[in-house]
Amino acid sequence: MQSEGPLAEDPFAGAAPGDVIGINIQVPSTWYEFDVHPATVNRSIREAVAERIKERPELAEYQADLVRTLKKVAREARNNKVVYSGSMCEIVDDEPMVASLTVSVTAAVNETTGETASTGLDTLLGVMTPIAGGRRPTDPWRRVRLLDLPEAGQAVRAEGIEDIEIPDDNRSYRAVMMQTFVPFPGSDPKVAVISASTPQLALVEPMLQLFDLITSTFRFVYRADLDTES
Image (cartoon, rainbow, N blue to C red; front, side, top):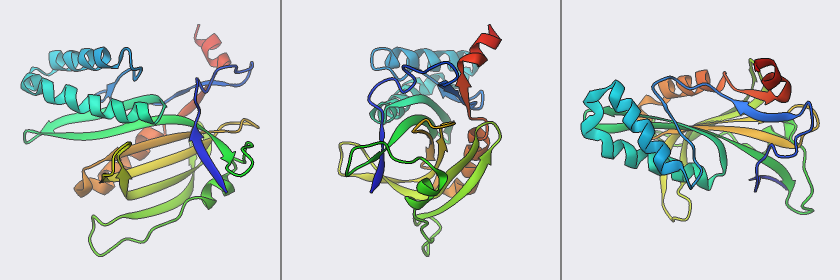
């Protein structure tokens, strides 16, 4: 049996010339992007919210709610050892409307031997099971498919409505979820996992379309890219 677990340290450490040294993804300008490092995350969130309130003073009365919601998103991201986190947090009818997107880097490992396992598309497809929809539109369902990302090549996607377990808790919550698994180029035994979710079950298709648009901007970054920019 094969599984994928988060890498313990910087997943790009020790990259040789020509290897991937980072990732890039573009979210809408209205989203919040912040550092998820434990030492700086709270300050980063407060600064991001304060900057947004300068742009939209009508949000001032919701400042505490926005900070609290984004801290919760950041905490969940940190538990999953992500390398990128972005969040939408709008106030609609006095309630926060939230969506989040993270990118994590995982290594496929054979649970029996502890050795590196294949990250081929067939392997990734094989560990995902489609789920037929129930009677109600908010019942869990999942579709699985191959797709081509414009700047990252072929990937495997699972999307639908899922019951998501809360880390270190016995509870779960139901959310619109999209996960896209992108194998690293060449023989690198890693996978980038782009995970997007929202509790807005009534907006399942519009949110999946938004997540698809964001995910389509994903690309790997190489040292040569940085040399070109400089």
